Image 1 (spheres, one colour):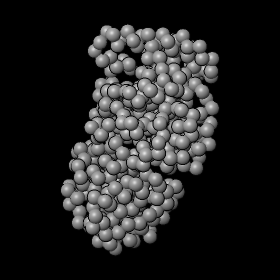
Image 2 (cartoon, one colour; image 1 turned 30 degrees about the vertical axis):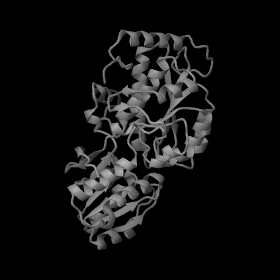
Image 3 (cartoon, rainbow, N blue to C red; image 1 turned 180 degrees about the vertical axis):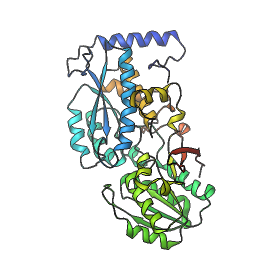
Image 4 (cartoon, one colour; image 1 turned 90 degrees about the vertical axis):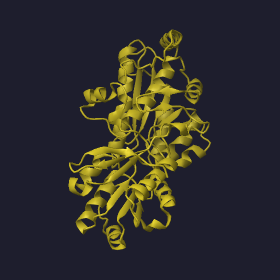
Amino acid sequence: MRQRLVRVLGSAALAGALVAGAAACGGDDDTGASGGNGDKCGKKLAYFGALTGSAANLGINIKNGAKLAVDQYNEKNKDCTVELKEYDSEGSPDKAPGLARQLVTDKTILGVIGPAFSGESEAANPIFNEAGITVITPSATRPSLSTKGWKVFHRGVANDDAQGPAAGAYIKNILKAEKVYVVDDGSAYGTGLADAVKTVLGATVIGTDKVGADGKQTDFSATVTKVSSSGATALFYGGYYQNAGLLRKQLTEKGWTGTMIGGDGVNDPGFVKAAGNAAAAGTILTCPCAPAAQAKGSFVQDYKAKWNQNPGTYSDVAFDVANIFLQGIQAGNTDNAKMLEYVNGTNYTGVANTYKFTNTGELDPSLFIVWAFKVDQAGAVVPDQAAPKA
């Protein structure tokens, strides 16, 4: 990422427009809640997703990417800073509605980065839609989210109609597995992704099972027995990293030596921690994202300098999503209606991808990215290849 947060697209006219936008922000008469930074504008963005709980790592990746963007913006716009408010949903669809109703009472919030997960998106987005607050999720991938008629909904990544077939194609064409077992956690995300994989693999799938979706299950012996006795050489898991790691660990302890494949919900160092390096090695993890370590400009260095760790899954996408909102604020879109119009028409090139949205809020299909990653012998999740098309 270049040090400039408002991307100059090559014209002095645009630069002038952005200066004018900044002046509009600085002169805003809104006397709502303070941004918490001594600012004169009082405008805010919100992160909505897990910061605690079994899927916290993925949520923290996203929050940290967004916070980096906001902090860099504020450093360059000290007369009109923006606050990032954090709403910890724990990734829970049950907690999400109450938290969303709390969020919409703050009339200075102009955009939501999230919700991070599909289940909580289904629960919270109707509330955001009624309030008219623009939503861009960097990570919720269930395809049906864009079919609900929510005018405020936008998705910054490909959905599982792209990720699922790509994972299936990897299993079929790269691993050449002839017997595959499919397990999911019963969540909105896990079930949808597993179903997409099963559609590609067809009769290659010789068995299916479900485990708990709350991340609290620790004994997977029933599923382990089914997989081990099935003759499967590959296992696809639809769900999140904590369950996936424990399942992989117990499969290895049982003597199963096949390859595990998981989606973006498993693509986290927490999977390796739960499984152990030896058991996790060789696991394939897909993501509708490019490797964060290959993000453009100085993003990787800036992220490491701020957070003392490498960017994780969706950190770079969240950075871009936050910057879409920040560019909108700087251009003078300081009410919900104007921000929604701005995001609907955006064509923004960020550090991870270019972003423009269809009329249902999906990322333009021409911009879809799906990658496969692999856990190496040292337990690191490293890029493997762009995932093959189904």
